[in-house]
Length: 239
Image 1: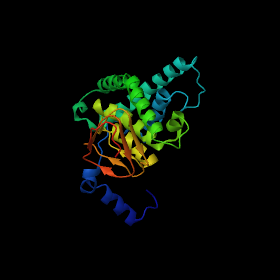
Image 2: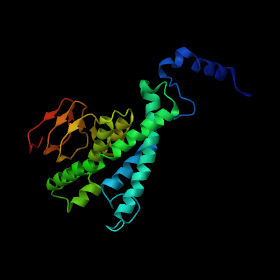
Image 3: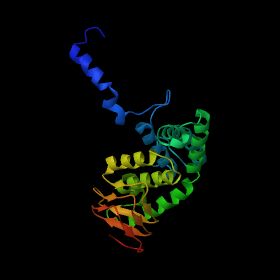
């Protein structure tokens, strides 16, 4: 380029040398992008709108319009999630290295649909989490307050979404979703952790739950701490 000094030109050459970037280089498929952190945040918000009707999103929902809004959100989720799963498969799953775009798109759509079919069960899990959070929070006036304001419920929601995606074998995306919750709430739950029904965390800032953790039903974690090899199976335990 005109005006570039020899020092800048030399620097470009050094940065373009194979030895400089070999381990850091991502070999792109033509025209494809990595999973988008921004779009994954939108996916989580759409999931929250479906799982907690009326609490998230800009629409005013009544029982009469719930089916319509749910249908709209599910269609949007399927489109967004399929696109992000496609991106994740392109870059991290060697099994798809030689597949055509059409084959990867088909698999991404199947995985997206498989995740969406888990949402009714995921909602039930979250209903038990909200119930437990409310029972353990004397400052809360209602379960709705827990859904809307409790950072633990936000983190647990992200975890439950990410865990379902993890169980489907989807790469990259589960960790990205739980890391989003980590940055928002200070609560770090690995998507591979196994957590049962009726789970909540009190005063969770700094809490770390690692990928090998196994937490049973009716468990409340209190205060900060790291649990990378945690196993809790006693119902009603408060740790």
